[in-house]
Image (tube, rainbow, N blue to C red):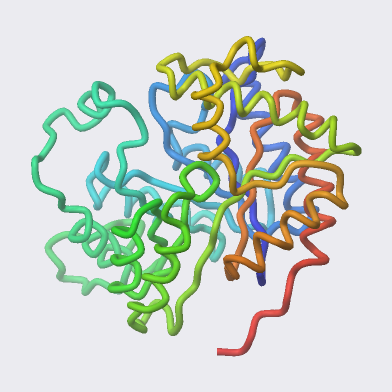
Length: 335
């Protein structure tokens, strides 16, 4: 692992508002910058009562304006919801305002339920145009001639780095074919992680964007002064994920010590499996667990996330995690 980064879903805790969440996100981003995190990514979700990052490009601008050096980006933009030209204009504008700091991760899922997806897209096309849309978007961000019939302004010539995101073999194959960096959503869907990483590495084709494969995986990390406190903090995410899985999404719940009365055992088993790429505990515990994750998957970059109800505890968790991750980081090899 050469870099460690942070994924923030801009959670809206129970008892708080979206305004609170966005203020907490800017505060956490400044804190992450001070701690040495390489990137700060936000993700597109819609119709989610517990997530405030629906207008992802706007929130990225909010975070970039609140920070100075950290890379800020999307992890990701759900491209089927948008026209490639509009995404190019949005991220071209961000790159113009914040040069050499903006990333654009692209996903193929809607980031919401079917009814909301239809509300977003109005007319849902039956065919899958994701690969073509990715290439179109990259072209808009490249060096288009002045007489091109359609240009992204701002956008043309910004060369915003584009990533492919995914949790299946589809994204791995596309990223490899296009010669783009690949980020796997292992923090909530780790089932095909090993197979996808192998596929990406074996099929990768060098491109003008990337000379050799570059992989980022995501993990949930909940750190506190004791293992018991860390597991208590993590209970909010377990409960939120269980409610989402059973069709009851809501604000990020307050932590609690006993989840058995709220989450049926079969559902908890599903939740634990989905969130298994994680580390929870005091610093010695998360160091041991993260070291094992890094040894098993050998990513170039690790992105960590944590849905913690109390903003102060969330900042403390990322502080402890950063101290551990600095000891696990290795220098990048020369290309």
